[in-house]
Image (tube, rainbow, N blue to C red):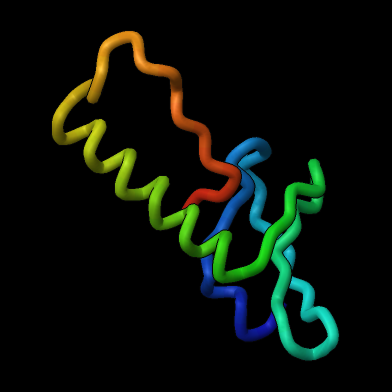
Length: 78
């Protein structure tokens, strides 16, 4: 995994650390080794950050909306 080891991104479904693959030497793709969920590293970072913010707000403010559908994130920060 090399330089990406510190990323700390896990699959939102499996809770396993993702694997990093460089495609054509330009773009890094993250992929769950269990379920195969994948996206670009930038998108996975963004989604993991959004998940962290969502969890923080839920804990700080309680349920944001009663009866609202559950928000699911494909990638989480470890």
